[in-house]
Image (cartoon, rainbow, N blue to C red):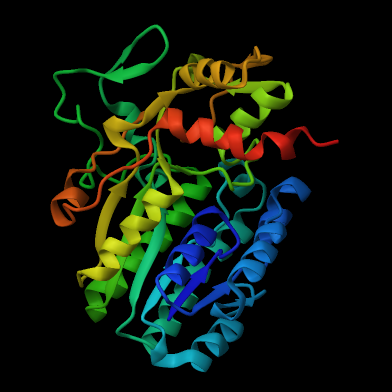
Length: 355
């Protein structure tokens, strides 16, 4: 049995379908708080209904709030040791929103994670616990790397040892994280500590841009999906800072969930940590993404530039995947940035353009 939080969101729903397809009974927890964060356009209720219709009795949904310790404990108590996989994707995911309400952000991201870890300790301590962390745990330390300005992107100095991307041993200290980054780092450390202190099978996947065509992309979160939507619909788009040359690596939700499965199939105890993203195979600058979106949509984009860079934001972030690939050599990326954006347009164009 798998228990998945944020089950109606992008990664959560991908995991629900994937593991249900493998024969798992899946318990999902999601209270559609994304609607609270981002308004009606951010709601994932449609995805919950799709999962319930598609999967029938193999999927059981709870509209519980992970901030409610008693509610979380009751769910775990009901299923007990039958739970052998926990995938925790529920989160408040936005830098900007976290600054508006740091208490709610911390309660969701840090305290909610603690409630889940403690429920696991009490009711199913042999389960595998997979946590979707973030590259924002490194704060703005990536911006201190020697970067070279190119025509359309920032790029790392080719002589630097991080040429293949940023590894797990980059320091998380002495930097600005944003309040979102701080709450996620708190959760990340808790997941590690439960693995180390109690010798549990816990893992933190520090993600780059995790995306896919079912993401409810909004301006404050889900930039590739939102950018593609703007290109298709003619909605004006705003670039924030760094001349639009900031670089992100992008990974498809299906490849993310396949990484979860690889760890579940051969778990490691002691609080493992992996950076997970598109790496050198799938990365893009904002200016490059705009050009790609224009090509795919066939529409020129209306965009403007704001010189106000988001605090704690990265100028260049490419994931070094070598540690995860060394531990799980059968896993590999199956999507690149072009294929990801083409799929977004193909799958969503009709819905985006509907009156």
